[in-house]
Length: 205
Image (cartoon, rainbow, N blue to C red):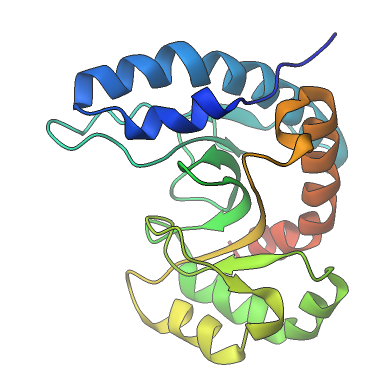
């Protein structure tokens, strides 16, 4: 089966004015691709981890005025939701595709997970130089992995709204992005390297 990648039109979705118009484009352009890519990734991760994981596609249901600036799929071990659990994400802003292991502010056992990451801080050295870190999933900005310091994880531990996401970004004009099969292979390789950190987070939960 050939998987469909993302085009510039998909990224341009976030330039559409108005909540209803942008949501219609997200639902028609992007979500069918999320469903296809997400199911492949969910099956893959379930097999790798030895337990069933579940696909969640962002609905943006709480929005009444402001259109979303990004959209994503999430993969979690909980079939009812993902925000309270460590989860894998793939999504789009207007200027990049993101691939994350995400621990966001709604996370249960956040303090314990942060402590677990701190106690295994040297394991981050096993990741290649293309990895980046986000401290706020609402913002586009990220840190190169080489700039990650223990103080970032200490803030994640101590500040209620603090977050920690680690993964990779791809530019819309990267050839990987438009080739769905190549993109899925790249995401799988990225998730493979993040699985040890996912296991650490689950152990702390």
